Length: 433
Image: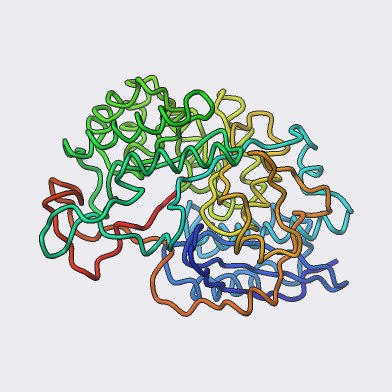
């Protein structure tokens, strides 16, 4: 059995666009007609360029080879051009292709992917959701500041503790036992920085309101995106510790492992990181530094399913827990589910809502979510089939990248009162989960 064909799909997401502006899928087909699906989580360059890169890497290193030989494919692609070091763009491309190979191998052997990685450990997988507005477009939320007056504009869920509390209560009523949110302010290409007094106050009020709304029925996951210096992160941690969050996510820039370790040692809140890391090499460095105790690989970026299994096993040795990240489409979700199902140190799985809406439309059979728990498929491979008709009917024609940080240094008020924005500036709303 040899890989014969490669095809890509760049899919634009309709409102509310939870999970991003677009998804990048690849389908591999073997010479005996078995196909497998994968997905890349790459936000560094435009999605159509990523699709071209997927085809290029497949034709150089995968077409004409056995889908079973994933380790040798990974080594060929990773070492191409004498790079041999973590690269988020290349690793995202490799992740999609390796994921599709696992799907083929599972179908060829008649087994779910998790059965090929040690077998089922968990019957159901606890999931969490990000707090989203009840309706509307995730990329078209009202401005925090009126662009003319510089005063606070209409309240929105990202800056209003009461609206956040209502959203958290709704999530718990749906069945979720953990919710994530990030009120600590926009992230920029210049971070880290010190949090402003306004954002420290807002973050504390936000966490308090959500905790009061959900009580002990749900864990609170405090999401930041590397905005702060170590001392700034510790100032923030001290404000929210009393509300017992389950984690403090990416408190400092992800390449500052020494600084992240200082934060981890200085707060009772467990530190989580991983969505922007690639390969077991980078996760090993996190664990050696004592920088985090919760690992969040995104299998559409971190190098694929086998790298994910190595990351999970390394975490197990260090008593670090696994919480796969997912802010993309349902195929990465299926890969995350496969890894979580066979990992003893699994903690919680990121879910995009209840895997309903457009995520469900893209699949022939949706991911099963019941009362806050994802139920792993028993079908061969990844257990999902891409609805190609739906994928082709929603091509991405935009220019924006998946996520867009602020490109100017953040002023003291960090997007709250007193920091007016131009009417066209919408980058603060992008959510990197």
